[in-house]
Length: 161
Image (cartoon, rainbow, N blue to C red; front, side, top):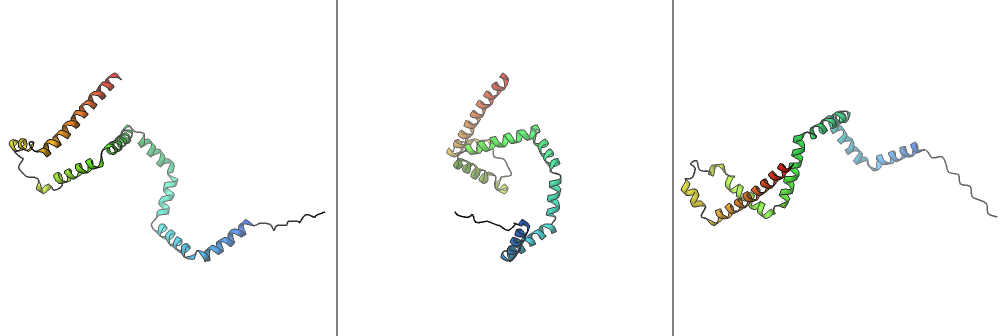
């Protein structure tokens, strides 16, 4: 009959294994370790570790003050408005927005080109006869119409509440 082979493993010393890996790493990764030590020294010289320790020790106060600030009515409105603005910008065709940005730049970009005397009423009215001005006025008129409809519906909705 077969005899079992005895398996005797030497006792494992994790501390000695780590020491051996550390010694091998110091020769294998010497350049990287030196760069890391240099980086640590620069962080220490600039007080980054002191700041990090301060932030970590005051983390409870920091979280408390941020959460109390974020819980104010103004902060909540700001976050909601930012989401609405992001949604609004996402709904605009980029070509249209580029046209608006270009028109704003050309109209208001050079403050020196603005005449010191305001235009007369006749020249303003005469300006409305061009197709470009009418196209712009049509867009503004459509916007004002839609805005009025939204304000009317939101006014009636808030009156019901």
